[in-house]
Length: 161
Figure 1 (cartoon, one colour):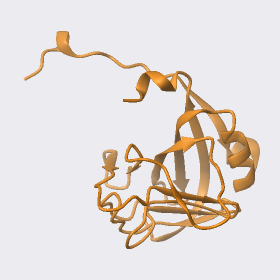
Figure 2 (tube, one colour; figure 1 turned 180 degrees about the vertical axis):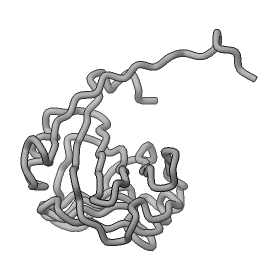
Figure 3 (cartoon, one colour; figure 1 turned 120 degrees about the vertical axis):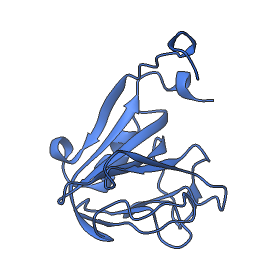
Figure 4 (cartoon, one colour; figure 1 turned 60 degrees about the vertical axis):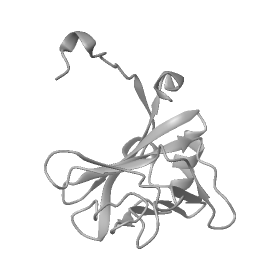
């Protein structure tokens, strides 16, 4: 057992860079706002049934002309659907971390996307995903979004390994 004297408390300074309640319902706006960040960013999504879920991505988000996966094995997804927050890390099964297009943002692959958001940030989907060995992150595989937020770390380099 580890005593508290051996544990380091980590304080993370987060700043919101994109929010559908503040900046409107547009993936293009979210992508544009991500350019204020360098390093990891936390995508937090809420559906209309009360689930909160999302994932860690690299910022700035860079749309590609074709479905080209980006990211590293530091990418993860999470959900509160199952009660306590549950985190799903990359398994190494594939390198399908996330796709960013002008009309789609999706995390994971193999089977289903762990999380997919449409360009209007009104609807999305989630399903079992091989990349993270995750279950559906939302209450339903197809869902309506209540809010989408993109948070950046003020001192991101301190948290990278």
